[in-house]
Image (cartoon, rainbow, N blue to C red; front, side):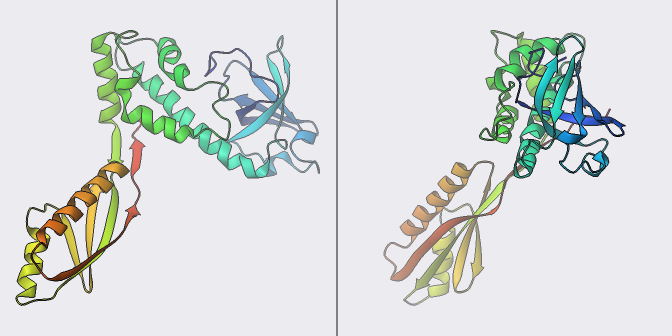
Length: 276
C-alpha cells in the first residue's frame, strides 16, 4: 500500500527507506516506508564515494531519506541514492516526514476504533491524501504546521459530505482524547511608580482592580504573565490587562511604562498513540 495512492514514486523524488539487508561488495536492500509494496536497492557507490562499510552510514531500524534513480516496474524494485540527498537537508526531510508518518498512524488508529467506522483505505483517500501527497515532503512545506492544524481542528477534515455523523463524533473524540497540550506562556514587564501619599495601597489597587491575572512583583519592575493555547490569545489578554491598568491609574500621579511582550515558554502539542 502507498501512503499517497500512487503506485510508484517519481524519478528524482525523495522517499524514506529503512535498511533490511547488506549485500557485501554490492550495496544494501531497503524497505520503503511510503511504498510497502515495493523494495529498494542502494548501490555502494550511491551510499558514499569512498565505498566505506554501508553500515557506517545506514543503521537498522532507522529511517533515512533517499533519492529515486530508476524504477523497475516489473520487479517492483527501485534503484536509490543515499548520497544525492544533501547532508544539510537530511534532518529537514526527517522532520517533515515524521509528521506525515504520525498523521498516517493516526488514520490507522481511527480505522480500528470499532467495526462500524470507515475502512483504512477510505480514510486515507478522504482525509490523509487530501492533505499529504507525494510532493508534501518538499523542504519548503511545513508538515508540522499541517499536522498541528489537523489534530487541533479535526472538525475541518471530517465533514458530513464524506462521513456519517456518528463516525465523525468518534473520530474527533478519539483525536481530542489523545491530545496532550501544554499552553504557551507570555510575559510583559512594566514599571509603575506612584508619586504621592499612600503609594503601596494605591499600587495594590491599580494592579488588582478589575484585573483577573497573575502579576509578579519584581522590584523595580512588575511582570504580567499570561498562559494560553494560542499566541493571539496571549497578546489579546495582555493588552486588555494593560488597558485596565491604565484606567486604574487615572487621577493618580504616577509613572507607568510597559515593555514588549515576550514568549517565555512555547506551546507543546503531543498526540498519545495507543500502545500496541
